[in-house]
Length: 181
Image 1 (cartoon, rainbow, N blue to C red):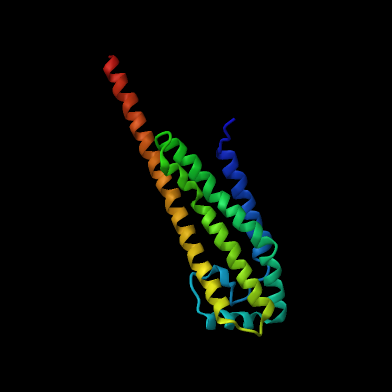
Image 2 (spheres, rainbow, N blue to C red):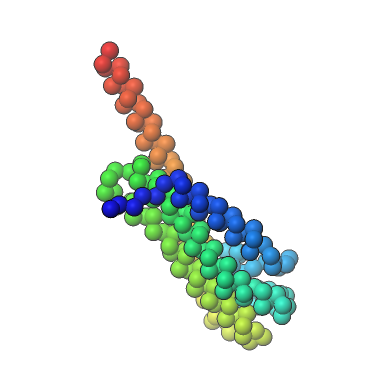
């Protein structure tokens, strides 16, 4: 039995994503913002932010990373992977190896979870400031965003391929209609 990803799955994923963002992730951030929304940061910048959070901010940030920010990467992975699957299935030749690119968002998921582990450790052991840990966190953050960017490009490519496939299909239908006359 084949499982299919349809528009209903995509809409449910979007709704869950919006809910998580509105309900959980916007509760805590002060003017410094979370580290995991940066593209790149140095250990100095990371620990400066960690200090600026204060004791309560560090506890809240850690709690979010251990709860909502475990669910959020899973949701955005589905939000990217499902439409990529759906679009590529409908716009590429059957059996095309490019259809396997729907797993790219899972690279972002893995790196996001590793990034969370690094940041949770940084928040927990502060005022300790292991430089290696901060570099590991920023490496995970940067590569995560590269995977997210690649996923968005795949999504846009899927939209373009589907539009192209629809144009070709309509042209063939119009041509066959004219040939029948």
